[in-house]
Image (cartoon, rainbow, N blue to C red):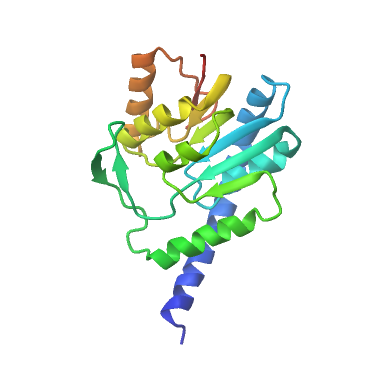
Length: 214
């Protein structure tokens, strides 16, 4: 009979395998859309970040397709159940992903993601919240993809934090735009764009971006 630890390990591996199979086509399509869009803007190697890494699928395929053009790729994910914050820094409410997961499950997922990139010297996985990582990652990013907390306040907060870290002419983008499941993402992106005069582009299904000008 399997122990609880062994059952958790099997479930985690099945999740990783499922995400890889399910997401490969989507991740490759997304990378082929945004990769040329970014690298054609700059003559130097690009610095990128994904906020909300999960199993690391998008980073893996993006780096695989454009490895010669990437100086550094940062992946940011706390791998934990955590409170969600507004720009003012106050906890609004908690949104729980995988509520039955224990700390050991998050630890195992994080370790598997780190292991996935052991042969990539231009990928750094940061086990931090978005706020914490914004203090760590240099202000020289050319591209940021946001796919973290999908509630209104998290999306606003992530755009606010990471847009400031992108160089002039770079791209900030994100996932789950104009979808039925995550309506708050769409509202937050459009509210931010309207307030600060950003022009939203919707190049492929579910993704948004705009050019950062300083």
